Amino acid sequence: MKSILAILFLFSSMVAQVYTQADVDVCESKFQLGISQNLTEEDIHTIIVEIAKSFLGVDYEAHSLESEGDEKLSIHLTGLDCYTFLESSLVISRLIKSERMTFDDYQSELQNVRYRNGKIAGYPSRLHYFSDWIFEMDSRGIAKDVTEDLGGECYSNKVDFMSTHPDSYKQLKNNSEIVYFIAAIEKDISARDYFFIPQEKIEKYEKGIMSGDIIGITTNINGLDIAHTGIAIRMNDGRIHLLHAPNVGKKVQITEASLAEYVKRNKIQTGIMVSRPLEP
Image 1 (cartoon, rainbow, N blue to C red):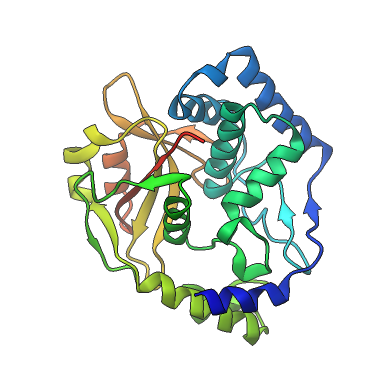
Image 2 (image 1 turned 60 degrees about the vertical axis):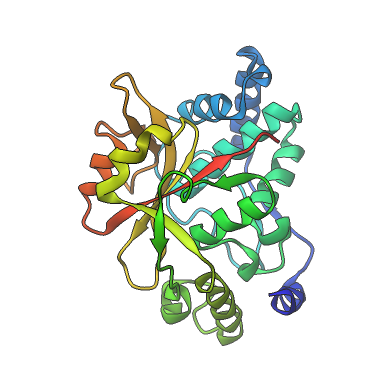
């Protein structure tokens, strides 16, 4: 992988940021929430839940990370998809806990969790596959993959969707060189050992899931690893539910059904991976 990463740096340029004043305002309002609720004194899981809940009602918005030209640090907090929702909740929570609460800090930490080794080196350096994100966060001590510890079983994680469907991605269409790098990354991901909790066993093992854990929902779509993501939250019924940005036309919400039932209701969802945020 080192040789691939070295080549990827050929794609590097002056890193540009894409955001609006509205994004700055949202970010700063979350920091103010952290201060007003004295969240710096809480554990990281508590902070994540509180920050994630503060996004309830925000509209789902797809493709907010995609921009023209070279890869940029795109920030869009006024509309969220399932990944940018949990990513923003984690980043803001880590900064509150570390008492680093400026928009510059947010940009730096966002880059740290969105890109391989925390560095922007072109489109392939973004952690496009969520199982790759889980692996990267685990290897860098940001969040621990606890799926196996909770009772997870071996997961055959063979990914190649991006390289075999380049026309579905603006940056890959008609760009065989970048597709080549993506395919090499997919090969590395597919060679790793992964675990998942099958949908029929989530209820059995959910007692080990903590509010604030990050959930990746595995899929049976060929070439994909994880189809949806969210944040675990234990509700008054004692069950783990999913705090997430569900889909186009929806808003950030908490599932009415438990996580176990939610996963069972979608025929493309096969189980879950669980990533546990660590104290920064």
